[in-house]
Each structure stands twice: as structure tokens, then as C-alpha cells.
Length: 245
Figure 1 (cartoon, one colour):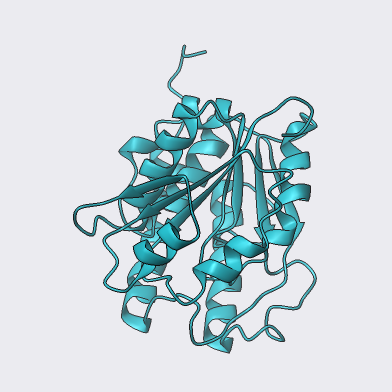
Figure 2: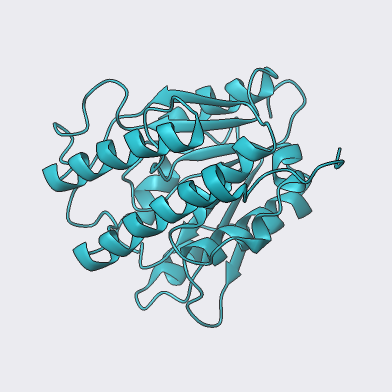
């Protein structure tokens, strides 16, 4: 809890058995009120590891629904626990839990509604093992997105994000995709509804156990990202309806 605000960390999990325990070990329990894990029908022992680690709030999808659907369950669960700030942390240990505190403070201060942990700020992503083709694709997509969305973010593709409860209650994110494009649709909604977005530098860690999508799905994702940005720019999708407070 920070300044009387309840903090929930949500872990959207899929086949994270090898990295879940060390991710949990670095979460500052003195800061975090609730740890929520949603398993998207993993085929490994993710659920067993979560139970061994005594995760109190464990939700299981009966079939694989997708990354976006996993987040929807995460946020619904966090809001049901009366969280004021919800931070999504991937349990694949690619993102350090040591940034949970500064991300939470960015929102608890009232300065921002959304906090993104950027792997591009600080220029350490390639040293951290990010494949060069992913780095180039990230920079290209971010450049195009900034132009189309009228923003100045360093990266749109991080999976380490924090939201205020007000943001989650306001945005119609249930209408977003159940797949990986969910994150970009969510950000487009945040822009369209006028929420304040801040960034913090995050070190990059790529290793065999870290989750990643293959080249074919990466290309599908990239096309989806461009479609979201074009729809926002030219068709005024993801915008707050006129007259809505």
C-alpha cells in the first residue's frame, strides 16, 4: 500500500513454470497488497508451482483464451479486490519486479494514470539480449505509431504496465482483442480518453525461458499494430464518445 492506495500485481501466466518462482521471490510484499495469477491453460506445471508458492488469488482458464483475455481476467480480479493501482508483471522474469515500487509511486502521486516500463529508454535493450530484428521492428512500429497517434512514447510494446483503477473502470477494454494486440488497443483507448501516460526505463532480459512470440506471429502482430493506429488516426476509433464524461 502506498499513501493509502491498495496495490495489486497481476501475473498473466502461460507456461511460466521455470520462471514463476524467482519472479515471485523479487516482488516486494511490503508494498504489494494482492498478488493475482491467471493461468491461461498452461501445458506445463505453472499451476502446481503457483500453488507451491502459496499464491492466494489463483484463477484458471479452462481453455487457452489468449494474452488479451488473460489480462481481462486479471483486471477484473484486481478490481474485485478493491485495488487502487494495478500493475501487470509477466511471470517469465523478463521484466524485473524491482521496478514495481517506482511504477506504483508514479500513479499514487496523481501525476499519471498509466505507467509503462520502457525497454528502449536507457539504450540497454540490445545488451540485454533483445534480438536485433525485434529491436528494429520495435523502433519502426513505435515511430509510425507516434506519428499516427500524435504521441511521443519511446515504446508501445512493453508488457510491464501499471494502471489506476479509474483507468480500468473507464476504458471499454473488454471490447479489445483477446490476442497480443490487446496492449496496443488499450493504449489507443487511453489516448482517446485523455489519460496521462508516463514512462520509466526498464532493463531488458532475454533468455531461453523468457516467453516470446515466433516470427510469423510477430508479423501478424505488427500488421495489427498498424491497423489499430490507422483506425485511431483516420477512422476515429478508440476515442471517447462525444458527450460522455
